[in-house]
Length: 635
Image (cartoon, rainbow, N blue to C red; front, side, top):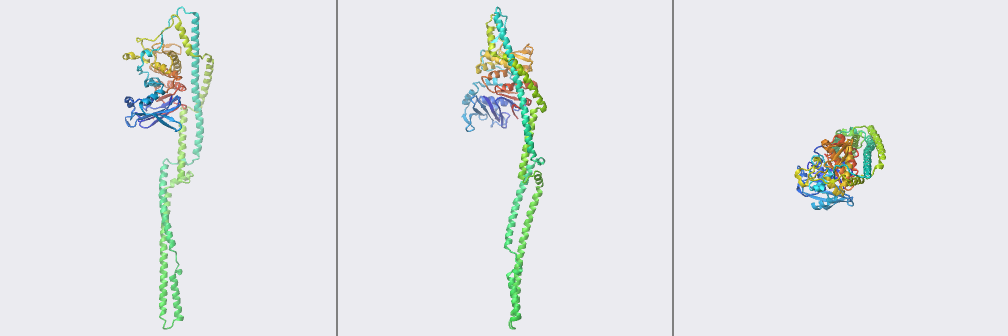
């Protein structure tokens, strides 16, 4: 089983929603001090082991948002199914659902604490919450604050422990030779295993550098693409940051201008319709004027040639009537022409207003028009689109530049390529060394068992015992306080060994050598070869050997080195279990007490362990992250 996603909201200091995604191998989550690393780890444990006990839920509730405190985790189980556990800490409710590939959604399967707890117990191999926390969670202060593990009796915790061997009396020479041969074969097998481990570590480092170089080459292609896109948007680099505000104001003015122009156009069209009704009428076309002219002409002719003396009075009447008709025609045509002039002047006034609106809009949008000309944009919408595209591509380029700087880590590309060549040479040399001792790679478990069988069968040989309540224990590695009584852990390294043996179905005689082999590889790598061997379970405290094979007393080790040893033993225990049980190994800033070089070396150990089981490292040191890591950040 491994974790896929962790979601937190309103959990302790997390007010806003936080989402972390994980991969099946090594994961690193960086966060500053008091950024929520411990909260995230506590939430993982709480979600994997649902419990409706208020005392376990309330500590996770945020004090600032107590009514909206919830968390969820998505896991991928050994049966290749996705499950999601959601716990509402505020309402003290839980639901557990399974992902349905056909509907692409999670379907609820449990919504009460008991059934959810039983189901999750099946995914976590039946471990109790405290057992999981002691086996698969490693915190910064675990070594200094190790306390007796509840519920594990001393008798159950005792592992076979060898007394110091005494000289064997009467042992057959053939047996002595065979025993010496087995020990020599074991030594060579361990050397072969160490050579293979160093080769694997070097290959991991070479692969990391190769991934960096590949990513840099991919980034160069993406840089070229970004530069091409930015070049096609020429002129956009001069656009102001507040262009969107300017465009919004411009579009608002444009809308107002269009509304005013439409209103004026409607008025102008109405007046033009009136102008068409009031047709232009010349005086000589007016009917009254024509009638007056006709009457006047007729009166003149009649007065000269037709009318008699008695009828002479009709002549002035005809002339007067003609004058009246001509005057009426003139008045009517003048009035109509005057109306036309009034309407025409109104039309001209509206047209002048429309031109003023256009001119005012153009003056207010001078800057926008200049930006449009600079970017060859035909409209404001096109200008906005180009500006958005330019900002998008520029942002992508900046992100690429930041990623490139992060990958390079302050060195040049040439230096990285040089390091790659150097690492290649180292891998070649280590491969040669590993091939030279490859024929010695045999099953060390069987060798140890056969050696123990020979030694136990020899007269006066080493005897096995299981300790006694009076045996002293090394305080840093499993010693219990006198008050613990029958629950004391006794003189045995790591109370987790009994749990690991039980849940993994591995005999102690097999488990301890496996832990030793993995731990001493880790110790040699993290201590830079200063310490090369560690033995557990053969006394009241671990036995450490330096590069000269000299035994170093635990009291002679510094506190930091004891922390280092504890880290190596815990990772060795997880590695020994990985073949039988794969559960996520979560570290809460466990490397913070190491110096920078040992932090980097310990991180490499965790990367190698990530090839066998999921490892999630929460750390405050972002320098431990590499470009090939599955990385996340808590803010």
